[in-house]
Image (cartoon, rainbow, N blue to C red; front, side, top):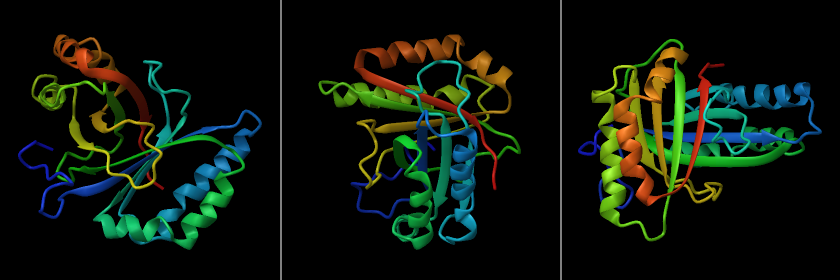
Amino acid sequence: MSTSDRVQADDAKEPTGLLRHAVFFSFKDSSSEADVQKVVDAFAALPSKIDSIVDFQYGVNNSPEGLDDGFTHCFLLSFKDEAGRAKYLPHPAHKEFGNVLRPHMEKVFVIDYWGDPKQPKLDQPLLHAVFFQFKDEAPADGVKAVEAAFEGLPGKIKEIKAFEWGINNSPEKHDHGFTHCFLVTFDSEKGRAEYLPHPDHQAFVSVLKPVLSKVRVLDFWAKRP
C-alpha cells in the first residue's frame, strides 16, 4: 500500500483497505503436539462461526533469521472494518477458543494494521512478517525514511510478489511495544533466499539501523481453513 493511499488512524477520513489482525503464539513445553493442534484447529474453525472474519491465513514459523522471540504459530485474520473486529473480539465463539488456548499458551503477540486488498494473491504464499520497534529518541523523519525505504523495495527486488505495511492499531495491548508491521510475500523459499542478502535489502537495513530498537520476524506458508 503506497503512502499516498494510506489513511492513518489520526486522519479524519474513514480508514481504507482491510483491517489485518496478526496473532502469534508460543506454547508451553508441557503442551503436546496434539494439544497445540487442538488450539490451531479451534482457531481455524472461527471463520465458520464469526461472519465478520473475511479472510483467515495461518501456518508455522519457518523464518531462517532467528528473530522470532520463540513464537511458533502465526495467524492472519482480516476484517472489512473496525466494526468487524469489534464484533469478533467479544464474540462467544472467540471466547470459547480462548478457553481452548489458555491452558497451553506461553506468550501471545498481536499487531493490527490496515492492509491492502489490491495486492496480488498467490495460491501458496510465503508470508514474511516484519515488526519494528523504534528508539524513543528516533526522529519522526528517520522513521518516515524507514517507511519509504521499505516501501520502495518491491520496485527493486523482483522476488517480492506482494507487499503491504501499516501502523499498529490493536486495542488489545499485546504488541510488546512494536509499532510497525511490514508484510512481504514470496512464492518460494528461493525467493526469500534471494531477497535477504540482496544489495537493495541491505541498503534498506542501513537506513533502518540508526533508528531501530528491536525487530521481530516470523515467516509462514499461509494456508486457509
